[in-house]
Amino acid sequence: MDTIKLLERYAKGERDFSGVDLDQVNLANATLWRADFAGANLVKTNLERAILIRANLSQVDLRGAILAKADLRLAELSLADLRGADLSGTDLRYTNLQGADLSGAFLHRANLTGANLSDTNLTDAVLTEAILSQVKQY
Image (cartoon, one colour):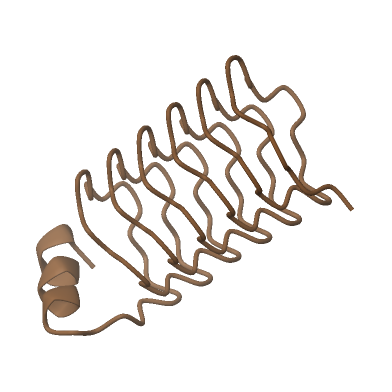
């Protein structure tokens, strides 16, 4: 699926994009509130400054994706593969990242206030100046 088709379907009220292949698609600045991308392929997708509040990104492959300055508040990212993703300046407040793989991810200045990081892999992740208050690690 390409960017135009996805945004047209979203504009018409569709929210279920689970399992879609959006490998390397440019969705920078897109507004996709409450969209369901569960199990989708978003490898190297550009989601810079995208608004994904309350989006379902569970089990999504986001390896190498650009999510810099995106708004992912209250999003579901459990078991997501975010290896090597750019999450610099991203708003991840109260996001569920349980079991996600963030190894090698760039989280410089990301806001993770209240995020669920239990069983999350942060090996070699860059967390300089990240906000980690009230993070949950069970």
